[in-house]
Image 1 (cartoon, helix red, strand yellow):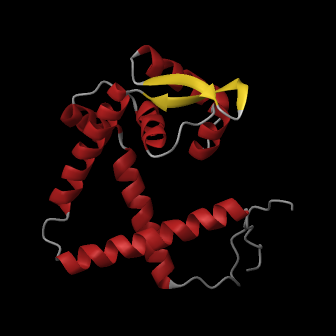
Image 2 (image 1 turned 135 degrees about the vertical axis):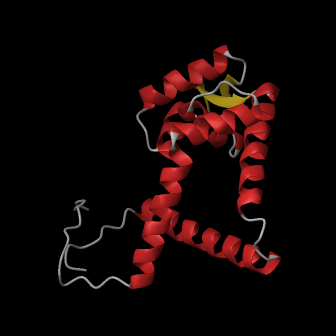
Image 3 (image 1 turned 180 degrees about the vertical axis):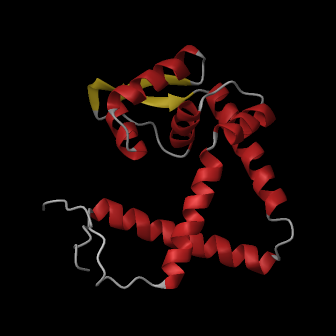
Length: 170
């Protein structure tokens, strides 16, 4: 299937709610990706990791041991980028290579106990910040938001994995 880039079209009717969601996600992504936010997160967690290392740490913490190629695919980056990050995590004691049980010639990457503890510190600092931002929300609103976000992300992942293209005149 040929991948096509969608073109803006006057014929495409987009729901105002979808536009609001897209704007909100763009704002949230911008805010969470800012260097200052990352520095604050590292300060709160007491870790000296860059953003790319945190992304690798998070992916390894939330999965079984992965081959470098699998890790790169999950992060949507080139394998050479992941290789450098994994080497850094190995040198700092956060990750290690283990034999791939399915192919003895290959290796998988997994977190060390130090890496798991580091990820727990990053997650705890992140969750504390989110908890503070949402402190005035009711438990019912939080439950509904969590459910809807899970549903939305599942749909995004399903679409990405199916490699469904958006027709230019959709």
